[in-house]
Amino acid sequence: MTDVQSDPSRRSERDTAETPTYACDDCGRRFYTQDLLVLHRGVAHPSALDEGERDAYREAYAAEERAIRSFRIRALGILVLLYFGFLLLYVFYAS
Amino acid sequence: MPRDASARREFATRWSVRVVTFGLALVGALLLARGAAASNAAVGLSDASSDGLAVPRWLYVATGGAAIGASALLAGFVTDRGFVERLHDWRRDVAASNRVREVGRAVAAFVGLALFALVVYRGFTGPQLSTINFGVVVVFAGGRAGLTMAAYAVGNVWPALNPFETIGSRLPNGFVDYPDRLGRWPAALGILLLVWLETTTGLTDTPATLAAVVAAYGVVAVAGAVLVGSDAWVRNIDPIATFFRFYGRVAPLAWEDGRLRASLPAMRLVDIDERTDNVVDANEGNDPVSDDSSDPRGQLMTGMGDVAVAVALVWELTFSGFVTTEQGVAAVRAVVGVGVPPTLVYAALFVGGFALFYGAYVAAARVSVRRVLTTRTPRELAVAFAPSLLVVAAGYHLAHYFAFFLSLLPSLLAVLAAPLSAPTNPVVLTLPAWVSALNIVFVLGGHLVAIWVAHSIAYRLFPSRLQAIRSQYPFVFVMIGYTVASLWLISLPTATPAFLG
Image (cartoon, rainbow over all chains, first blue to last red; front, side, top):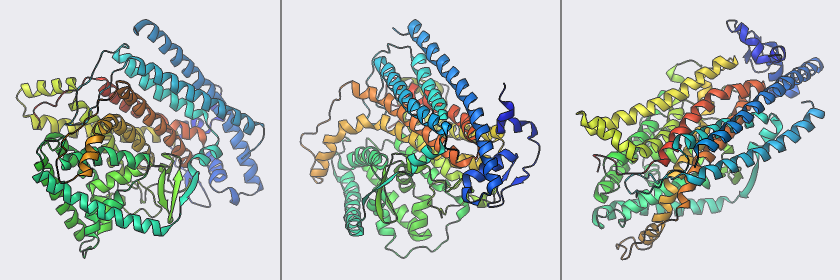
């Protein structure tokens, strides 16, 4: 899979044993990766962001967008398989 | 949020997704409706109806499961947080008059008391025939079917009707503090107990027994309200009030801040305060003390007891569906034939099935946490996603009781018009065959809306949208399991449960 690098939750699966070290300054919620913290701050405390954080959030959001696009392609593939699979099943078995 | 080309693209995707979803749902429904026979599995008063499947049953069931899986994938296509938020934040004021509300409450309280008295009185003195007895018809066609359908389709009126609360809250009450660590478990057990009584004791056939049970329930409810306080009783223990409150959350109409407001159906289930909040009022972990009952933020569910209630609502309909099918009856007979007492078989089936449903759901929460690497606990996820089960339960309820309610509607109106005399010419409607095909639409529709509710909830829980999508997979598999079981049940021919009543 080529999207491993841009997909925050997937990339972090390797470090499962680590403790969540990235804590949000505003609410104290902890995260396993920097990306998740950045996304969390952008979504939950948009008004508390400074300029640097805002840029980081934009970047993380765009990276996530790329990962989501690859998810969409795979999901579409599965839907097509399901559709034609069931079409064939109905051709053979329904009467 | 970057609003540029990607936003426009998202808008386009959104619309195409909506069109595709609708098209797929329509095609699926038409395909399924074509050859499937479904049956009314209302306990006790059911009448058998069946005809052959043009589609093999395994294929019909698999199609239903696939429809759920496909719609979960499609929901994953909607990644615009703003759009998701707008859908469940949508509200319209319908009425704002407190006067109307007070008058309505007073009238409803009176009606509730009168109905309670009449159900008990006519249950004992009325004709001992279930289809014309006031008690049986009002409790099952009126309350169990009609009022419940109204609770999730329109709005919940039980808090105003509830005769036990009307009495209990006027007596001196609250002598003992309700132990908060019990959460909503008493209500979950109460619901299971009532369903057990309904299924196994022939309440639907013997009006006098029903009247005795209703009277006993009234005594227990008033005594309980006096003991622990009316509010604590209704919120945590009273199974009927909890039943209606949970179903009522699905409804589009509700009083919020003194105003009657309309929302999109089922969208009030997404009530997690904000993305930052702890879902459970917990010090987290398995500490039973955190199974708290107070809901300071107006949240419907705060502990595992609430999850149990939601699962119980799904399971009770599956169970009553199973024991009234020919296959279910055959299975029970086979086990009893070995020498096991029938009651024990039903009890094992009832409790075991509930444990299976509950276990599958909790296991999904555990798997979900392991998959997405979050600091949220499995418990938090289980509680957060549980409201989506209520839509599933509402779909099942509609599938089980819609035809039943329609056919008994004339009887219900007749007994309500003349409570003190037996109807001279009771009418039970015979419904056209296509009504039973609607059942499949109800079951699938409930699951589809539930998928969307879970999607919205996931977006509130997780900062990363991919996390939100991934977190749902285990729950989707559990839902596919529930769908498959339910679609299979409504496709089976019905029969009278063995060894009961």
